[in-house]
Amino acid sequence: MAETYDPTYYTAVIWPEHDRWSSYGTVQALKTEEVDGKLKLFAILCPNRDLIYYNQNGQYQFCSIEPFENFADLGRTYLLGLGVTDEPASTGTTHLKFSNSNKGQAVGTSEPLDLSMFKLPKHEKADGLIAKFFSFLASHGEQAPTTPPSQPEGEEMKPEQFDQMLGALNGLGTKIDAFSAKLDAKPATDDTTQPVT
Image (cartoon, rainbow, N blue to C red):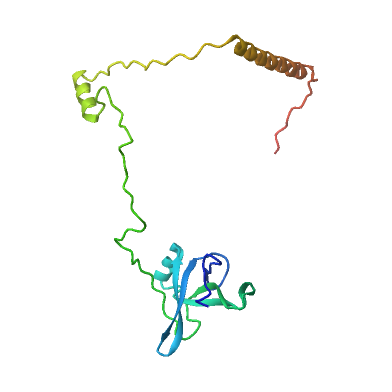
């Protein structure tokens, strides 16, 4: 089973008590090793936070494999899934123990970050907290009037654009007038609603 397992082909999912209602992670790799004259199956798991939580609280301490014979007509047994249980399913099953063996290690490759292409904005006057504090003291607590930044005026409308906008507004006005006329022509009915008691 270990020699056929390939998570890129089909990933075995970790299930609580073999129930397919909430996965607890995936199986990343399998290997077999002979220990004390017996062939044992070992797995590298990628547990999610739920499995780690339950495991640290004494639940889901053991694994139980879900082998599938002749998987995808390959003629070999494949690991379809892995159940995590509160008691061992077979002899030689060890407790699950999760560790963070990558503490302090960088994962991935580091690339230097070149910030030379970015230009910092140049401020004409300091707007820092200290500068604001001293200008507040210098003005004796009165706020200096702030001038709004001048807005650049837009381009003038061309006659064609004006005619197009005027036509759209006239069409909208015609539709509103027609709708108002329909409302006025509708007979008034005495639909007074009585409260339900």
